[in-house]
Image (tube, rainbow, N blue to C red; front, side, top):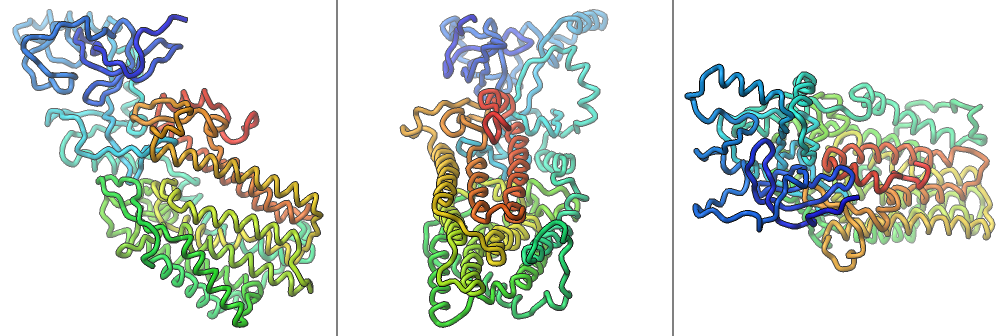
Length: 617
């Protein structure tokens, strides 16, 4: 294999394709298989050049004129022209005869002239999207677009807007073959003050809808509440077998209880009050499209401590949490109604939100936007509704429900102490919640915050699904006790710790690299440089699989279900559901990263071939 001539980071002169002009460039990377160098011009344009199109700086003598032009995009207004005519450049002289001009054009069409499709690196067509994976956030403002003539037009497809990193040199004949196909997907955008907004709206309308589009959104919104009640009703049966499906349905008037709805609303607003307390540090979120960074107060752990104190005081004064168990279905219905009302409010207020505050996932369809969320960061003053619901009412409520189930088990089964299985389930899930609240800042870089809007999907998931489905193992053990021996418990604890170590260490490594890629503690990690100026980790936990944090999460989910035994499949519903959820989320991550990082992401996938489970998937 021939050795490379130029090193990464070296400043050299690169030939502009289709001309004999050389400009100052920086070597970014080298592909040993294709023998192409990825270079970056001073205006931000990135191309792939052959080695014979690159020359060291010492090969050129400085011109006396002292021209400082460093890239073609900065010489567009110049009158001087190169003798070698690049594609798309007008003829040098108007005195050329029509026949001579036609012959010259025919000769050029017969040549394998390399042509470049330029996609401005700085276009960020979608709301709060920040180029993130293992690196720090990429922030590009709208006024960073390269200067062009006022009447210049360029075509940007939806795909090329995402894959801004994929610059390559294609033969003109290949471009002509693809021109007809590209024209069906591309829409001309006139360069002007409103071109970016026009592009954003066009790209939003064209992009594929997730979750099956409008039909899938309708099915999820109607099916999940019904499925939740079926699971809870089956769990309450003496024999929760599939042969006994469907379980007997209670009367509708028996499910609705005004007092239960009042209890849930009170819980929600108490947690909101705790979140507004002036305790905890204030941090900035990821950059928005206009360059602003929203501020968030990190006091989730303090809210958990205050909630624990309030619940402890209530138990001391004789308040029975057994009410939560006896009215579990009523509380679940109250949470569903509250989440629907909240979703309606969110959609109505989003209709008046400015364009740059809308979610990049929104489509313009009322049903789909109601489901996925139309506004990215809905706020009432400084109170961020999405960020609050992401961790507080549902996650802390999950722990309170688990405690209520533990006390209900002791009461119904006449136990002086809770069973070992119930203790394991409560302890494992308590550790998970405390870890999430302690590392609250990490949620600011998740897809839920930076990409998805706040609509029914997140409202129902945060306020209903998390507290009432994630506590399913504890609810199951109340009706179906399972005795676990200490040797078996030791194996389950070891599995839980294994999953937690993978989950926490991989997330810590990722967050540390995002904050400071130059940290000496991370110097041993190998990376792949991307055209966005960021890097992808290809060693450590992120060289093991592409999503090690998901793998750790899945292992912990299995450890939560094992204390319930193997008499029924119901307690393992959470593991099955969570596996499907993580595979779907992983697929969404893959699409986002491939669009953002282009060729660099393909290279990363070759280096780290397994997505979730080594040697399996």
